[in-house]
Length: 85
Image (cartoon, rainbow, N blue to C red):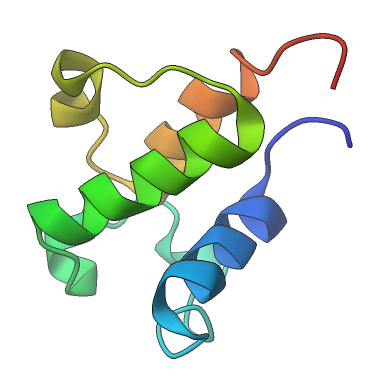
């Protein structure tokens, strides 16, 4: 597996929410804030926990507070995935 992209983010959302919310996730919403996508802080936290479990990336609460869009979360994770993945 190489990197963390919109495809991986969409897969995480599908796993967390049975696919219901992932269908609308495309490149046009990458810079849209999670709140505007209908994701409250609990939803974003659940997504982050799944990313941490599946990709072995630490996302501290302080960092999560600053990750307000899918693009920012994707970029954060992509730069922190262990090289041996």
